[in-house]
Structure formats: C-alpha cells, structure tokens
Length: 331
Image (cartoon, rainbow, N blue to C red; front, side, top):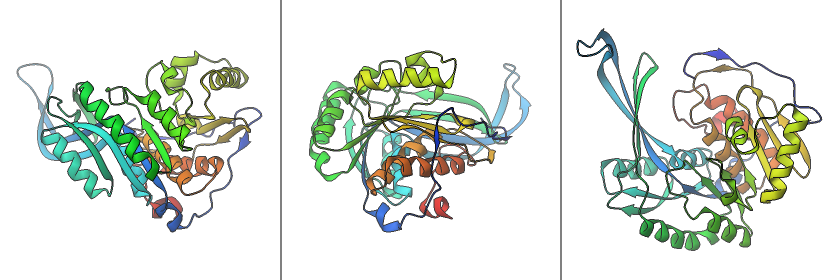
C-alpha cells in the first residue's frame, strides 16, 4: 500500500480481551535478549528516478535512475528489526558467493546482526529489485533460486551449535528453500526448552508442527483454514488448527483491524494504532521480531503482543522494509 490512507478503528472481536497498555521496558532487558533468526534472506534493492517521457519502443515509462538504495529483506530484515530494539540478534541463512551476498554481509554488520552464513557458490543471492518514481513503485524484478542440499545440511549442523546460546528461535519463511529442515529445527529447539516463533508461508503448516507461536496474516491463515463467516467461526477454525499442529498460540495480524492472539488463555485483541499508513511492506517482519525480542527480554506473550502492535503502527509510516528502534517504541 503506497498511497496514504487513514487506518480505521473497527470493533474488537467478540469475547476478546483487549491488550494491556504498553509500559516502558528497561533498555537493559532488551540488551539481554538473544534471538536467533533462521530463514530466507534477500537483498531489497531500490532504484529511484524520474519519469518524464514514454518509451518510443513500447507504451511504458522511461525511468531516469538517479539513486540506488539497498536494504536487508526477508529473514535479514527480521533480524535487523530485533537488533534495532537492542536485542542480540543472530541470523542463520544461505547466500551466494556474489555481489548481493557480500552486500548483505555488509548491511548485517551495519545493523549489528551477528551473521552465521552458509555460502553456496552455485546460488545467486535472492534480489528483489524495485523501480520507483515519485514514491510510486513502477516495477519489481526478482532474481532467485533454491539453495543446494549440501548448504542446507551444513546450516542444520550450524543450528545445533547455535541453539544453546540463544533464548528465542524465530523461523522466517519466504518459501525460497532456506527452511527445508524447519520441522527438525523446531523439534530440536522445543526439546531444548526454547520458544519458537514462525512466520509461515504456503498452505503446508504441518512442517511447523510444535511451534510456540505462529504469526500469519489474514490471507495466509485463510489459505490454510478457509474463509470464516464470523469471529466465532474464526475461533473454532483456529482452535482446531492449534490442537492438530500443537501450536501454543497463534497471532493473527489483521492490517487495519490490528492483531488477535489465540491461546489457551483465551482471545486477546490489540486494535490498530490510528495513524496514516504509508507502506505496509515489512510490517509482519517488525511484528514477529518485536514479539521475539520481547519474549527474550522476559516479557509475557501478552505484553509482547502489545509492544508488537505499537511497533507495527510506527513502521507502516515508513517507506519499504524498515525498522523501529527502542527510542521510537517508547517515546
């Protein structure tokens, strides 16, 4: 959503408690939070320019590119969001031996994310190239390929080594092949007593069995449980899903309707923060990263959701994949 629109405040779901007010969490608590992000990484590359004419070759605009910007995307953006809050964030992923891969390494260093990278020489690092003019996206070009089996196995072995030194494990799935062994990773992490958060993709959620918290948006949940006719119908479908796949909780992000947490304790709703919406891309990354960093800081899941809802309200006011830092969250 690139055009500006006001967020509406719908009524809360039936029989749902409201999330508590956000209280300031001491900075040192976030500094003690150790989050390991595992998943698909990509380089978000932006070309900005002016359009003053139509091409004589085809009825398309000619963009005179004047500025380029690179940002971390996918799981790398999730780790960057956790680090922005002050958490000690690590990232386990596979990238190629190429210029975009080196750029990701450079940006991770600038973002204070500890990189645990497997390098696949045959893999072109995933790039999402966006061409924009006057803050409007004109075109997106994707370059991507699945990692080799050997690199993924090496990543699984690295995961075993990293597990003891992290409090919260976050699986960021963008369906690029980096989470081929996600079921084993979740089982290992839960056996070690770690909280496991999953940002899902696709309709095969059996692979996420046993996760502590899964954080779909409305479209992702609908793909798995079908369309719901009411809040009661939604609750029934989510309860059945949680029981079948042994999820402790499901956090549904609902865009202009805020977010709803389903757990054994009941239903908790956090209404959207009323503000101008500029760009929703990457908001899900901010939500799950904030929840993970908060859990690692010793907060309850309910408190973590309240913070994540505030962070989402801030990040949608920024262009592209962005972060919310500690000072912004608690100003």
